[in-house]
Length: 306
Image (cartoon, rainbow, N blue to C red; front, side, top):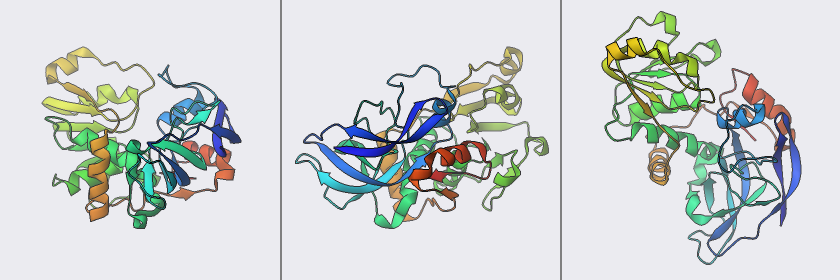
């Protein structure tokens, strides 16, 4: 089979291309993708060439790990039916292109175990399931405290705040410097300079900005914890004396696990967690080059969907 996909030939060189698909195996499903999200974290790093060496990566690369679509073929060992609507976190199914992510494709082949069936009513917001599961993964770690402060009011920051409230935690404070991203109703959004607190017990950083670490340590109470929930291309460093005085703790939250996807799906389908108002831009896949520029350069763009 062949399909059309977004292809990142090298940094800053992106377009739509015809690519070959590897044939499906007995445990695979074939999915026609209806919506694919653009990540402003890891995908931006690949696009700009700033991504550090990463296992399984290379060029040309099919990006995208936020895909929602319809099952059009299911192998005999796959527990799905034709017509099921699913989320799939990309696929490594291409002959001649790296598929470290691989979701920005008109059609893809995936192991059935990687897909999650979704209520069709969720619509293209189903493409956000990976980000929501990543937020849940950060909150669900052993001995993790709910965030009192979240840094960054992008999609991940918003999902961290929404999940905190949905899971019974107190409404957090959120820091955001972009005026276009400062609106909220269920919790307070402030610029850092407008926040007087220096006694946060739990800070979650969703900004991906390595340079903030010293400032965040200064906002902790003694024994407080900073959770690094973003992805950081630059080396992380901090001044030791302030961290020593605070007895600061650092925790790294990686990407979601399978359990996070299923728990998050249940929260979404029950209505406990809403994905409303997170998709701000929708663009035809044929206009992918401009869509990626908008996603990475326009502060008003929370989530771009192809």
